[in-house]
Image 1 (tube, rainbow, N blue to C red):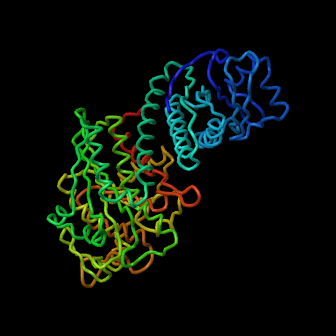
Image 2: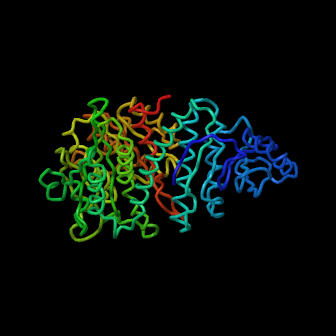
Image 3: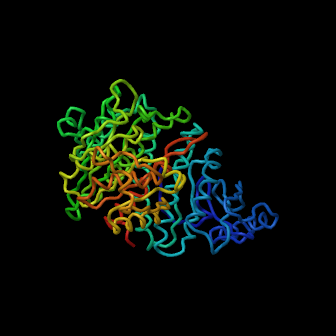
Amino acid sequence: MKFFLDHLNLNIVKTDCIVVGVFKFGELTMSADILNKYSDGYISQLINQGDINGEIGTHLLLYNVPNIISKRILLVGCGAKNNFNLFCLTKVIKKIIPMLNKKSIQNIFFSLTELHCNKNQIYWFIRKIISDVQKEIFDISTFLRKEIYLKSITFDIEDKNLLLLAKTAIQHAKAISAGLIAAKKLSNLPPNICNPLYVSLQAEKLSQIYKDNIEVKTIDSKKMKSLGMHAYLAVGSSSKNKPYMSVIQYSTKNTLNKKIIILVGKGLTFDSGGISIKPSQNMHEMKYDMCGAAAVYGTLIMAAELNLPLNIIGVLASCENMPGGSSFRPGDVLNTMSGKTVEVLNTDAEGRLVLCDVFKYIERFSPNIVIDVATLTGACVTALGHDVTGLFSNHQTLVNNLKEAAQQTDDKVWQLPLFEEYEKDIKSNIADFSNVGNRGAGAITAACFLSQFTKKYHWAHLDIAGTAWESGINKGSTGRPVELLSQFLLNISKLNEC
């Protein structure tokens, strides 16, 4: 899909379809009014007949409009004039893109960008449009298995002073979409293909594609053993697919500062629960237990596409949790890389065992910021549902920065506490910690466990168990929180300041 910027008199635009807006009660947007005048009131006549009422998402496709060169005009309902926002824009895109593709329309001249409320919002309008269009295209090709006819969208930009912002928006949106789609594709693969080795090979390919910016180091099970990563190894001990850890180091020559940002992704390519085996119903969805690693992978792609002036390390922590004769067991005591010991009470609380060894490993990089992304707990789904990601941290400024990025992208998060009172729930009488709490607040006690291994740096934990994928007929990865992490990095880079 290609995106362009232009401004032409709408009566001479030669394209498959011009998209313009109609507000509630039939009030025309500026572009629609221009087309109406060129067509001698043809559009207002149809509105007066009740063919479209302007409610958000309603639409009317017109053919052979008098005095208009373009083949079609699409009238799109934009709701109340003073209430149109990015949320409304998403509703519009979800309605019109599948319809336009079904009509085999290839090229669109998009005149809804005039509805931005102020100078700065043109950036967000264009970014949002491209993001939503790419998501719809991905869904059409993946779930509906339909051919994609849409080839290009040209945004109508009347004010030349906004061109730079608009160009930046296109550049950023394309890079973020590339990362998001890469994360979705990796997450959606079946576990007989996407195993720990496969994930590590995908990571290594990044060093070939972005050879000037990315280096990849692969840690296999033999190296993990020599490093003392016994908790990580225990999780993968009964699978024929041995554990791998990929360390993706990204940097550029124009780096803003020497700060190290590390993104850690939980990559359980399949989680049966181990000896504490999960119920069989919906167990096939446990291929999505590597969505954290996929999100980190996608975010690194975004950074490389934009050549962000940052030092970023992505760690993909991949293994498989399977039952068998060599499985780790409830009752086992594991020595972690940090030297702290963990009593295993539930082998299905495996992600935290993998992550705790990774947190110790990355201390060698002296990171300033560490963010882990993990489908960690069903308790987080119980607490926040499927629309909001759980956020935990030992540093409030980092929380505030993540919240800002979440608000900007509508990739919602909600901060949950890490009070000291929860620590007693993970105490063990035979080890330093147990791997699960002994009562409620499961998402919090899991994060509390992780916090015991992250005291040497500013750390945030994103529990994406409820937001990483959708179930049902259109089950698949959402790609979250790639947009959130991308915006967080863009804000640090200050590349989209207006």
